Amino acid sequence: MVRTLSTPITDEEILSLNTGDVVALYGVGITSRDMAHRYMVERLIDATEPLASEDIQIYEELKRTLDGGFIYHCGPIVRFKDKRWHFVSAGPTTSIRTELYQPRVIEAFNVKVVIGKGGMGERTLQACKQNRCVYLHGIGGAGVLNAEAVVEVLDVYKKDEFGLPEAIWKIRVEGLTGIVTMDAQGRSLHDISLVEVKRRLDSLLYKR
Image (cartoon, rainbow, N blue to C red; front, top):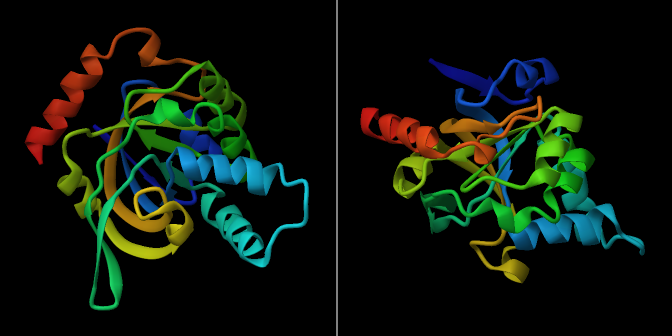
């Protein structure tokens, strides 16, 4: 059975999930890789000087979007057509690169779902438990399929400074799918075995 989560996601919904559950995400969130995570922590959360006007705008937008929302570890391939951005390919990228920053981001912005590839470490696992969040192992090798779940690009931040793949993309998704491999009870399939995760992901991929 596929569990459906729609933003804003509640603590109760997160606590009802267990490792191994298949989840389909609906609603609004962002893409963010390691460069954007570092920006969020070092320049927004831990700012030692007054924020520039652009940074204030981004911080306020992230507070709204991520409160009960999701972060997708993804460096999309995009195109600009008919005056709008579109995702062409959007496979998950390796999550462990954000491990240094992810717990702070989860806590500061009340993130409920992180979706990526390969799992994360003990810091993020503890942050999931303390802040009612789950980590989803996304469908790898299916960039075009994942891009189809991104039904609208709402905005983009820092594309000139970071480049398109590393930029923060605000997106609306319908059916972005993954498997819970780190839950809010402190359990992690990455500490057990990824064999079952791969089997489930393969079955999802071939059913669609």
